[in-house]
Image (cartoon, rainbow, N blue to C red; front, side):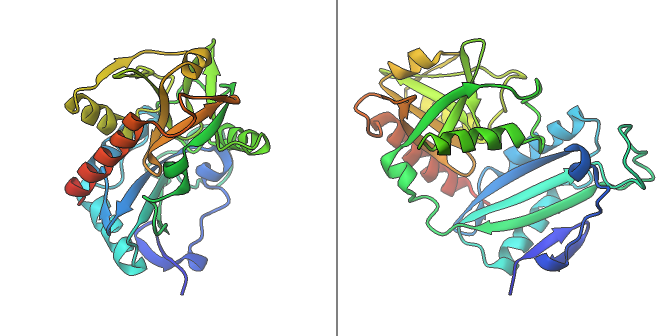
Length: 287
């Protein structure tokens, strides 16, 4: 049996879930999304994702069609019916499907929003080769729109970036604007010098990562310094360690940037320690 998904108030087999060709998420990328990780059948950082979802919707002038309680109930039901132990839940909300294509926003009274959720089962997600061996990244120009703080479904350029990395024999790309790293294609970027973590400060330039917030909090609690500022690729290449964070990759070491080994060329002690702390604390607080 295939997955059961959620669409506009119904739980349906995935092959029966249909969205209109006029949906603005499809035609205009007029939609936002969240991905909440699941470990041991429980949701990681759920409230952080709910808060960021509300912010993204508000920034685009969309209402939030579901309460926290509604969202939690749907997430848990999808995990139950699909028997997901480790993996994630994808959530997407669009402005809906008006009668025809138009650049002007439809009247929200006449056009209900489209709400979709589905699960992805990923057994062994915490024990990935990327975490054990680290990943290699390339740098590419950041050619996305200016509001990267809104988690929209405009993901074409990040997808192109991942394909550029794949073509170069690497795992991911770090995006560079005005000579400074913004973030990874689907993650926040960090370097470590001594006992100091350096990562770009929050602004419209980067996504306000839920995992980022948790990792920096845990780092401070572990008596590590945190410096929030931009850095260059050259500075990253001369760092002791580097890593990324995201809801699906947690904390993952970066061992090479543009062909230059970082530190020893193997996952560093601090990045590995932060990953262990993040996973331990996240499991404790999962719901």
